[in-house]
Length: 95
Image 1 (cartoon, rainbow, N blue to C red):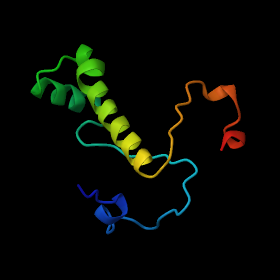
Image 2 (tube, rainbow, N blue to C red):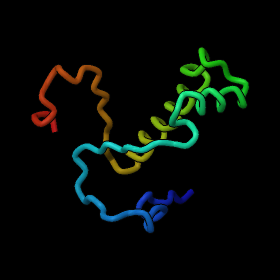
Image 3 (cartoon, rainbow, N blue to C red):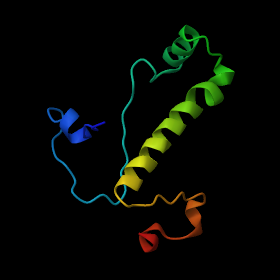
Image 4 (cartoon, rainbow, N blue to C red):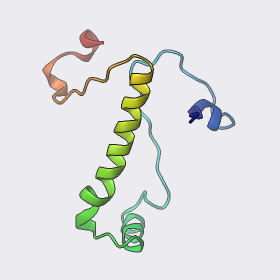
């Protein structure tokens, strides 16, 4: 299964590409989830209660993203270190 790179998929929307990743922060929003009534409506359409958001909606999505990131790292001989306490050390020293 070939994975399409984000730089290929969104080539027409990109203005530049970083070649060395230190830390990446992605920012944006997904319509119509970017406001409370939009997300509530989405959950309602999919028969999910707002109280079930964390377990039934967010957790499977998080697990899928994590598994994909771990597979990509393993394919490239890298390890992912999960930092639970960001104040335990200086990130610049760790990098």
